[in-house]
Every structure is written in structure tokens, then in C-alpha cells.
Image 1 (cartoon, rainbow, N blue to C red):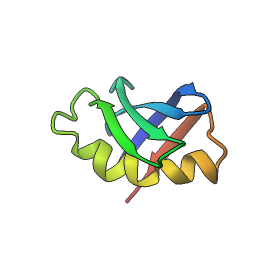
Image 2 (cartoon, helix red, strand yellow):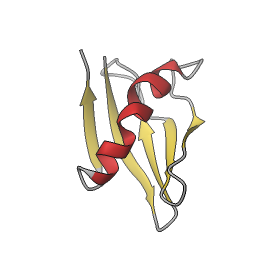
Image 3 (cartoon, helix red, strand yellow):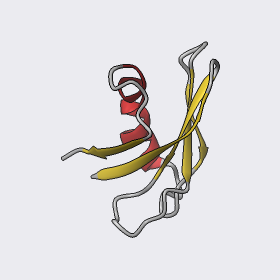
Length: 82
């Protein structure tokens, strides 16, 4: 299972990443947000093919805090699990 992430917004309050589903041809049109003030993670928009948000919940949101803080919020990130 994998996902491509692209940084969309980074400011003092939130970080928003666009994400994709597993397929290499899938668009990165989903959006997930991390609140820097509260630590809350949420799905703003599900990606094409992620109709119920399962991919974002299981894959992206579980790793979002690490990507932001441990990896210093990169512009692009490839997340592979499995």
C-alpha cells in the first residue's frame, strides 16, 4: 500500500497535504490536514478511489505527524507500507 503526498499549505496553524491512492496513475486530489495548535488530524477531501476515506485514515493520517515533525514537512513524500 502506498501514497504520494504533496504539501499544499503550511502556516502557523495548519499543514495540509494532498494525497493519492495506491495506483501510479491516480491523481493526488485528496486532502488531509494537521492542526499544529491542537494536533487534530482530519480528512478535508477524499482522493479519487478512496470513497469511504479508509486509505486516508489507515495510511496517511497514521503517519502525518511523523512526516511533519520528524521529516520536517517535505514538499513531496512517498509513503509505502507493506
